[in-house]
Amino acid sequence: MLRRYNDSLNDCRHAIELDPTFVKGYIRASKGYLFLGQPAEAVSILNVGMSVSGMSDNLSALESELRTVKRISWLLEQSNSAVAEKKFGQAVKHLDSALMAFEPALRKNTYDGILTSSADFSSIPVKWRLLRAEILINLTRLDAASKIVFAILSADSLNSVALTTFAHIQFLQGVAYASVLKYIQNALAYDPDNIRAREFLKRFKGQEALRKEGNDAFEKGSYSEAVELYTKLIDADAEDSVPRARVYSNRATARSKLGMHDLAIKDCTAAIAILEKIKFPPPVEKLDSAGSSSNPSPTELRNDSESKLFRKLYLRRADCYSKLSKYDDAVRDYSLLDNMSPNDPEIQRALRNSKGEEKMAKRKDYYKILGIDRSASDIEIKKAYRKAALQYHPDKNASLTPEEKEAAELKFKEIGEAYNVLSDPQKKDLFDSGVDIDGSSASDGMSSSFGPGGMGGMGMEDVMRMFMASGGMGMPQGFAHQHGGNGGGFQSQGFPSAGFPGSSGRGRGSRRSTQGFPF
Image (cartoon, rainbow, N blue to C red):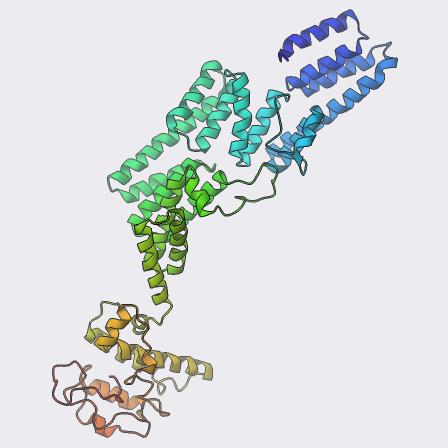
C-alpha cells in the first residue's frame, strides 16, 4: 500500500462524479478520510451516498459503513474529552476501541479492552497513532509511546509533529541535551509554524539554563542559593521526568550540606519515586496499576540505565537517616545498596555501622535519660544526676495520681541506672562501645541502694539539706551515719567527708559504698 490517501480521495471523488451510484466509491472515500484522521468528512461523504437516488439496492453496505464510521467518530470524541479532563486511562480505552472498530484485526492483541504492546499499528492513521502516543506519555508509558512514534518516523522522517513528540519523550527519559535539541530543531525546520515545537524549545532551553545556574552555585559552595534555584526549577515544571529526578537529587545534596537532613530525605524519596514510575511502569494494558508494577529488585536497579542515579539517591538518603539517628531506615537503604553492589567495601562498612548504631539505639540511652551529651564530663554527669534525682524523688511527687507516681518512680529508677553506668569509667567505656550494660542489675546500682523506703528511708527534706550543705558537690560530714535507715540506704562505710567519688579528697575511705546513694 502506497498510503497516498489524498490521491486516493481524488480518484474516489472523480469516480463518484462519473457514476453517482458507485457504492464502493463512497466507501473507499470514507476510508480515505479516516486514514487522514477526518471522521467527520467520512460521515459526510457516506451521507451523500445515502441520499443519491437509485441507491436503494445498495443501502445496506453504506448503512453498515456509516454505523462503523459514526461509532469511530463518537469514540474519538470521548477520547478527546477524557484527555481534556486528564482522565488518560479512559482516553486510551476509548481510543483503542475506535482503533479496533477501524481495524478489526487488532482485537487479537488486547487485554481488558486495551491494545497490548504487541499490536501492529501500521494500518492505523498517523494522527490517531500520535494521539495514542501522547496519551501514553501522560500515563508515563514512555517506552510504549516511543515505539509508536519511532515507527512513524521510520516511514516519514520529516513528520514535524512526530519529531516534536519524540523530542518530548527523549527529554522525559533524560536523553542528552544535544540529542533532544536536534530533534526539536528539525521539527521546526520542517514546519516553522509548529507552535508546540516552538513552545517546547523555549521551555527546554529555559530549564537547561536554570539547571546550569543551580549547578554553578553548588560548585561554588553557595548551597542556599543552589537550593533556591533548584526549587525554582522544580516549581516551574511539574511533569515527572528523569531530569526532574536529577534536580531533586541535586537539591537533596545541597540541603544535606546545610544540615537540612529531613528535607534532603524528602527530596531523595521524591526522586526515587519519579525514577521508579518512569523506569519500571506496568504494561500499557494494566492501566489500573498505580506507580511502578512492583518494587524493582536490586538486580533491576543495578541493570537499569539510571542505576548510578538510583545508587546516589539511596546513599544520600541512608546517610541522612544515619545523621538523624533513624538507623532502621538507614539499614534498609544500605541493605538494598549492598544487594545492588555486592562486595562494595564502603557500602558494607556503612551497613555494619548502621546495624551497630541501630542495636545501640534500641538500648536505654543513659545520656538521654540524664539529659546530657555523650561528651559530658564526670562533673556534668554528677550535676545532671542530682538535678534529675531531685526532680523525680518519690517524696516530691507525693501529690501525683497513682499513674503519675508510677511513671515518676520508673523515671527515678532509670535515672539511678543511668548514673550507675555513666559514673563508673569501666562501665561507661563498655556502654559507649556498644556493649549492653544494665544499670539496674549492677551490684552498686540503685536497685540495691533503696529498699521499700524509696531512698533508704531518706526523705525529700534530707535530700535537699544534703544537696545544699554540700555546696552542690560535696557530702556533709557524718551524712552516712545520720541516714542509715532500714531500707538499705547509706551505711557507715559510705562517702568520706571530702565528698563524692572522683572528688579531690580521695583518702582511704573515698571508695564509694556498694550500697550508698550515688549523689
